[in-house]
Image (cartoon, rainbow, N blue to C red):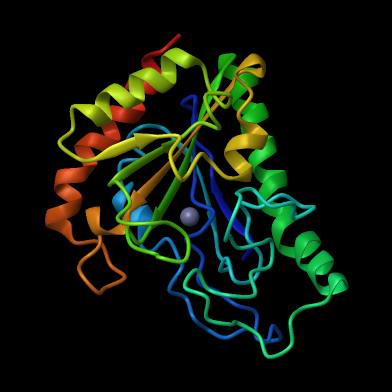
Length: 250
Ligand SMILES: [Zn+2]
């Protein structure tokens, strides 16, 4: 399944582009799913209560990375992974023979495009209805990946494409909640927002986009791929407050 869209009517879309784990059997990629944003929809279990429209892909980022541009231009200087990753974050190879350009184009049309068509349609629907919409890009990552960044990542990494993907007051409101939360945080640090945040975040057209890259250590059990309910119970009020603060900005 390329994407499961749950339509609701609040001016809020939560996109989970890296939670998928399916890999079509004909794709000869190593089944190393370590870079999945594990169990993130469980963490955001309040989405329905908020009236949020959600987009949940079925396929793994190993099939195609939904948060990379269709032309695969690099988003970050230095080490990163592309539209069709050929290595894990830690550098392990995923292929014996890397996919050719024609295969990359096929995956873009087959697996990337449906997610983006759905996201565009939902944003348009909600801007039509409300005049504006908050696009919350939900992500998670290990807080130590030496190949991608030095040291230990903060708990809450807020990305707004250097302030261009949302109104300044909205960025400030979310950052203020993070600063008061007791978690470490940074705004537009190592993770400034991927393709989705940068492409769809156009406050002048009614779409305010924010990426929240959470350290996995804030909510997963140590060495597991499942939410630890004690950690999640502490983090969820902060997530709710950040989203509420963003929605309150007019
Ligand atoms: Zn992610």
